[in-house]
Image (tube, rainbow, N blue to C red; front, side, top):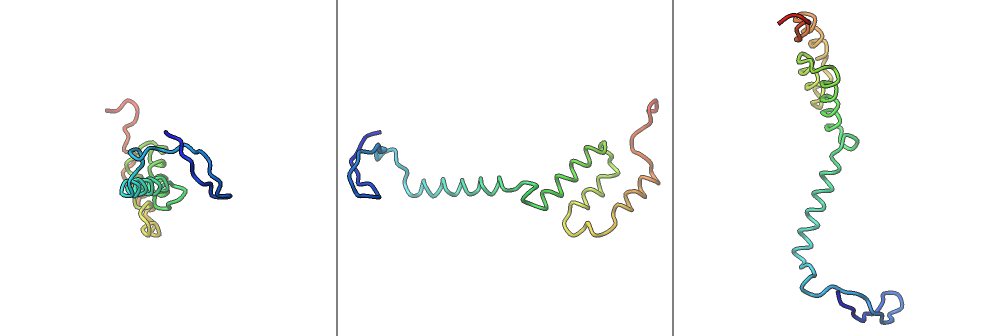
Length: 112
């Protein structure tokens, strides 16, 4: 850092301000690249369940799958509900029917 006398923006009086040496300042191309990365990071950070309905459906389906005990017969229904536009069909009737017909995929205690 070095000090330079520069005019202030408000009253145009000269003041001593610390400045970076020329070899440490960024070129316009470097500034544009940093701005591009910052915007990409901002877009990535905005992909949260609160800001994106598709992301919300996927996260909800994954959490339900885990909370309901990794029941593999529930997975197709959860996946189909997470796909936008497909959730209007009654896939849960098929899932409940499959569980009623096939039973639980987990063995009972004492069985192998």
